[in-house]
Length: 153
Image (cartoon, rainbow, N blue to C red; front, side, top):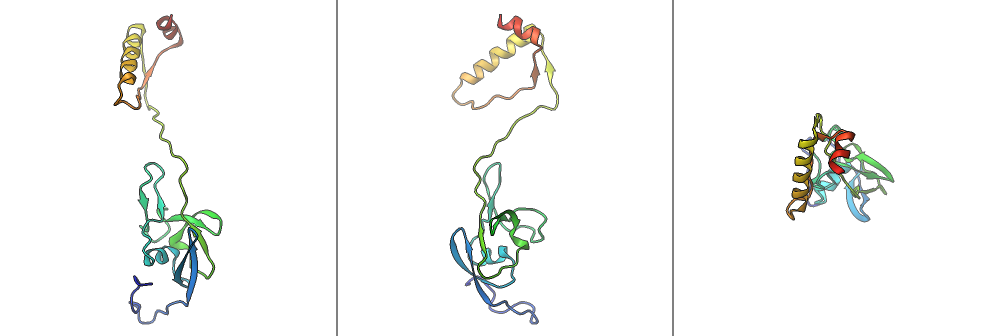
């Protein structure tokens, strides 16, 4: 509780009674009815979730429940916004682990290739895929079945 204000900014505010919550299996001291995100910040936990694509740390951002950056699991319910959850004694919460994430590149437009263009492009893609530094190759070409059969045969 060291990161809390000594007294509330609003003199009429009443601090909730001390309660204990669990975050990822560890006990944290909190004040009843304060948002879970505030409890986590006060206990030194600024990372509440991670981005799906790059697994970058996310924490409290908007404090209004609009952004989803503070989503976690609360009492077994996934994707709960911690800025909107009032703390109570015995609350169990956890970060949501990302087991996998994937990005798929889908072109909005495609270019249809003739036999000559298909041969050139397929040779280029083969050359690129042989390079150690190239991990993925994305393209927006379309080779009709008849042309693909002619190139393969």
